[in-house]
Image (cartoon, rainbow, N blue to C red; front, side, top):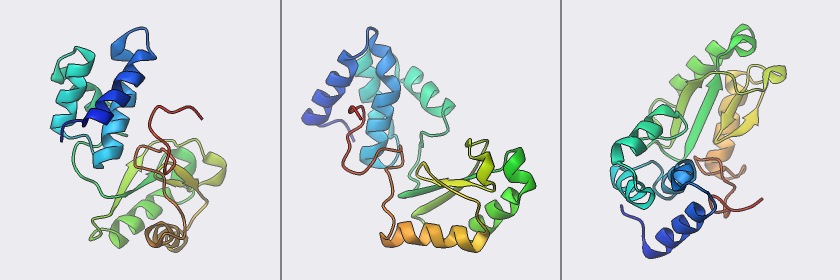
Length: 170
């Protein structure tokens, strides 16, 4: 879906903060992803036009960063660390257990990630960029279920706090 007039205005405000318009690429990708739940091809074309670059440059950036999703993924992204500290403390088991438990849940994407810098709480994971750990599979499942039920408030899939706009101060 293309940007609406208010979204284009917001995008132009973000672009104006940078000495080089191309520097606004990541915030604009976050903005599009928060709106649609993923970065659509139409959003990539809009961003390219706004920045005066080719859609291939936007796609290249979007495909480089794993935080940007190029297909719908649901509202919760569970990122399980399997780097060294988490690996030796059960990260691989945590990942497999969560993959099995949420395999049929279209609202939850379980993904393996490298270090999330929470080594002292291994095995650790993030749900939409909020840290949790150390966790067993059962405890992690309960955390995800709390987000699903609304008992815990999830950030957007780009990590913004609910109600905060992308690129806003604070």
